[in-house]
Image 1: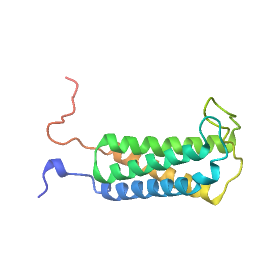
Image 2: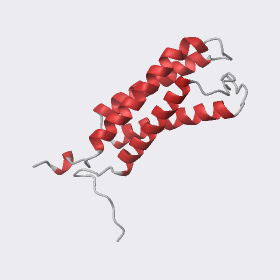
Image 3: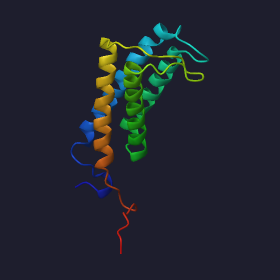
Image 4: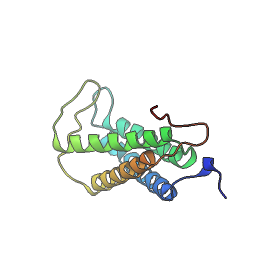
Length: 146
């Protein structure tokens, strides 16, 4: 019989694996493409920003698998949702250069962009499920109105 502390809804393991896989795909694509975007630069290059995205996605994937807590799930959600939002904005809107960030407008859908968008969207869905279904363990009682 499992203790209340170790209880997780049945889909948690699957959702964690899906989220980690989506983040790993995101990290791989951004790390692989970073060199191609080093010439798009202002103070920082788009290649450098791709490397940051790859590092954050890698860290988030590791945390989702190892540190199974709401803060790690929220971090993974933020990395995936933020990456997806930026991908869509720079696909459809010519924002221009913003301070140290170069103009990253690219009005085409490449296969890598599609794969990254799907991976990020799937991660957002999986981490939303994890956050919504989180059940506090012993000592973490929810306060009920009196």
